[in-house]
Amino acid sequence: MAQIVLPARPYRPLSADAYEALREAILTGRLAPGERLVEAEVARQMGVSRAPIREAIRKLERDGLVEYIPRRGTVVVKLSPEEVRDAYYLRAHLEAYAIRRAAVRITDEDLAALEDLIARMRECATHEDLHGLIAADVAFHARICQASGSTRLYRLWDSLNPHCWTLLTSLKVAGYTLLQIAERHQPVLAALRARDPDRAEAEIRRHITELADNVLAHLDAPA
Image (cartoon, rainbow, N blue to C red):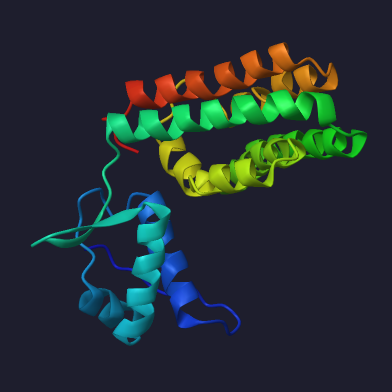
């Protein structure tokens, strides 16, 4: 197993540091899909007890980044075509409904916030900051769901762990620069500015399903 070390940070729970270190190792590919996470070994490498490691692994399991397999233990998930398709197409359906509602409810404040998030994506793209770009990307979609005015819809969307899934699957995207990924959000924003529900729904479906198809086409490629 790859060497995993805790980052040097001001005091906070050891489980939070362990979670961040393990999550980073998974997302960067240092812990490969199918690789076992052995609590005792991880604890030894990090120089901590097994309790915070156990808690961190539970959180990774809730995020969908690791899974427990009987008689084998906890392993890093391997993205399957079915899981990727489900995650993206469920998001497409939820966000299509959200954006239809948002298109007739959107405020100038919401529109300004969405524009700022695209600007943040562009800035991250110029610095090759994939993690920052993905954070702004997910915040953009979250803002649309929130602008729908449906708390239940937002909770359902958030339960899909959009940040982890977007970051994990983005490692498989090919043919787009980071700047192009940022610019793909402009047609969605333009449709919202026009307050056109049909156009907005078409744009968000295209935005999500095109990326899903790209990920699926390159799923077996190395990260």
